[in-house]
Image (cartoon, rainbow, N blue to C red):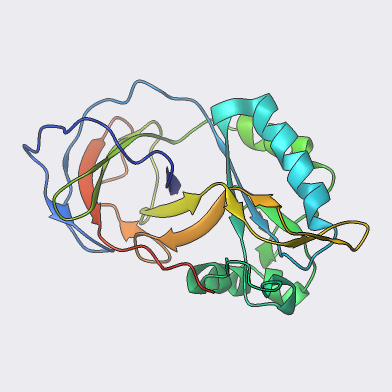
Amino acid sequence: MLAIVSAAAISCDKIDENNYIVYSGASGEWFDGDAVADHSQRAFLEKYTGVRCNNCPTADQVIAAASSQYGDKLVVVAIHDSNTLQRPIGESPDMRSDDGNAWSNALGVFGAGEYPMALVNRKPSGNGWERFNPVGGVSTQIDEALAAAPSVALAISANHGDAGVDIDVNLEYLATLDGKQTLTLVLIEDGIIATQKMPNHSDSAGYVHNHILRDVITDLWGADIDANGQAGTCRKARFTYTQANPVRH
């Protein structure tokens, strides 16, 4: 499961630290948690995009409309890998990330070399993953994801602590799950101005990029959740995030 922490929303009141332990990365300790009030199913849309991809602004428009339609039931992350289409234009910020590149390779996006490309809830397909061009068909993918019954409910809050940003995660199993479960926390940033190639092949110097993956806070493939996976189980932990990847120039 993936959980998103937005760079634009990482402040709130301090919370009681009883029964929590502060840790970073993939290792740490979990404690008995509390029931989570919000059991809404959500769709996680990861879009692989690039500043030199002239079809990507069209996908941005489609996804922006979907975000308005679905509200907080849709979580979007825009990922720039190491394909040449992601290389910054001029002196624009470099939005490529090593974490995003690793995901792109593992999910077959980089190998396919087709951008824009998207996945919703990382749905398996054959020996790989179901990918699609987000210029169209986005609502169909989102509706299918939202129609599924949620298996885990999450409550997440973040605030600035003494050592960095403290991210408190409380989860409740709504269904019994077998095997190991992991939690992946990522940092995204909105409002980055970087030159973008447009559908008419012109360069837009004032293009606003949103949902940009800046860092994977946990291990790339998630922190192990210490839980028995039984329905009704509630667990909680705190992650402290101390350093974001710098913006490259």
